[in-house]
Image (cartoon, rainbow, N blue to C red):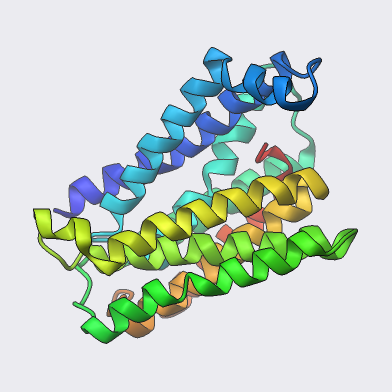
Length: 270
């Protein structure tokens, strides 16, 4: 039902945005501890655990939203969670600069245009060969990420950010593909479900390492751009995603504004 998918898209955006803030609070509380003990200390923080829970809810909501909404809209809404994080940061006393408010306005305008132009519909069912190909595509972010781990300097975090974006792209594509399938026990052995799991694990792992090695703004901008653009085009090609009649230019402008606003706010991602 489209209404449920629209609600899920909003929950996804809010969940990831709030989750980022809570995880940041938890990590800062344990900032004085280093080494393995530091990792344990971070995980033991209640705000961090709540942040992980919020991410989990957002992840499920993302899958639900993709059942009826085109990927170019769902992925843009997911990336827009950084705008939620920025607003919360402002409410907590971190002043937003003029360009931050401009980025929020750009992001909001882009999302409105996408919402107006998107045609809500269930995805076309993919052929079995395509479903297995999506699972096989998990090899790409894995290989790219392993290369990034062996590099050093700026090349390392850039390659890792690309690997993370590719992993999140697999998650988005698999989520959309699952939308064409009935909910049943048989899904537990379906290649698209395992694509979603594998892609998510790879994406989150490489994203975390990229943030350790590079600037959060640049890392997040690279990841956001790939995870929004690549699945959006795949959705148009494979799953019949489309815009309303005569609204192609509106969707294109909205898409560009959403990406621009999200990447401009990328420094709030962590």
